Image (cartoon, rainbow, N blue to C red; front, side):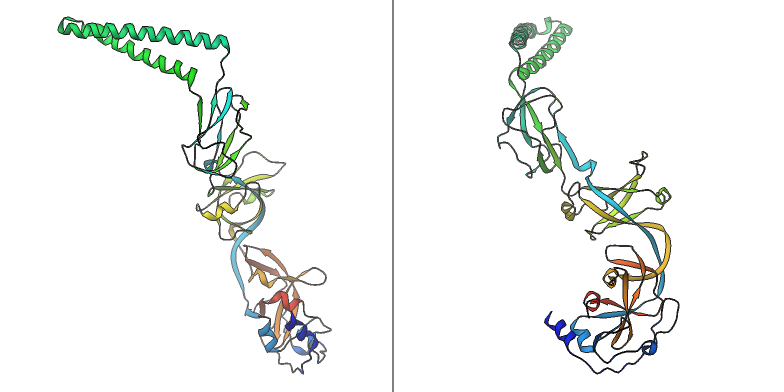
Length: 370
């Protein structure tokens, strides 16, 4: 900042040498005789800026020659982050009952869980009549098991004299009775375990010790940390067959792949769906419900001048401009029209001609010179 103040308070005897590569948007040649210049350093009456080479180095100003080129078309969409269907699971009991904690206690939101891990239990509470009825059924089945076991032992003791068919029937009946006993016993004594279907981050939906819950109540939710899904809206249905890949402005390192669109309109607009190309750990930085800006690439091509997004600044009228280096120590602002094509690139569509030397680094500091 001190260097910038020094730059603005000092004056430099300046001699202009025109650059042969400086052209306006319509191809006109820009020279230092286009306007009356003062000898002072800094902002001039015509809006240009005079700056010695050593001060340019101090501010880190870098330039490059630009030319028109054809690039892939794109569109900017407002999107929202959602959990991928493959990476989200809910945990619900299949019967009414009272919630009980697992051996590790009541798990809180944010804890990491593994697929197959027991998150808790729901114990069904029978009425007195139901309990008496189930107990009676269990005693009856156990009595039948004892009797069938005796019959099986008696036939086996007879050896070859016993009917093989009768023995097989008794053994089959014994298996069925044992299964019935297990079911009745489980209904009387064992609570229903709540098991994590996938590995991920846990969300606790008010699961508390002793809470009475009904069948189908969502007690837990598990979200995989590396699986996300992006939904965006558009009112231009013509792009639906042209979408392919996309980027997120907030996370340019993540690649998106177009998956398709919903056949039903959402508030008169079409919902398009993107998924992460790779299961990156960076996906965990995307929070569910987070608004994002999506740069979607199209299959068509457009013509313009490709620049770093750092080259674009705004003037006092809040209009987008770039700075053209017209000579060794003179910079001229130029109003342009552009479109963002990626988180770090813009395409100048109007206002800038080819073969200009444009400032691509230090633009913001140059724009503040007074």
